[in-house]
Image (cartoon, rainbow, N blue to C red):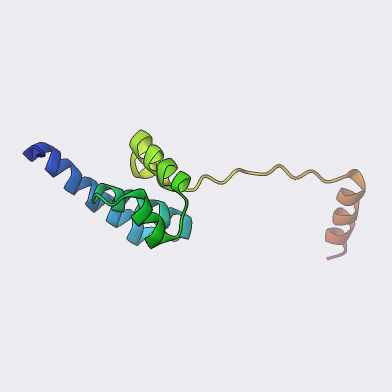
Length: 100
């Protein structure tokens, strides 16, 4: 049986997750939040897999990220990709812009 403080903490976490799910624009973030929320509600990985159509590794990874970083851990972190142009491409773009 949970103590009053443990129960209160779970309720706070559920509210935070619900707000995160509601406010996120990214489907991946919302799905991560739902997986963690369902886990907190006591559902098994199999039940969550059936409901959300995700893998067990997705569920455990989402849970781990949430445990480590809270709601911030569920956000998608985009990797910036460095794009390099050749000198020829730079000249072509420069000429094109100059003609405008």
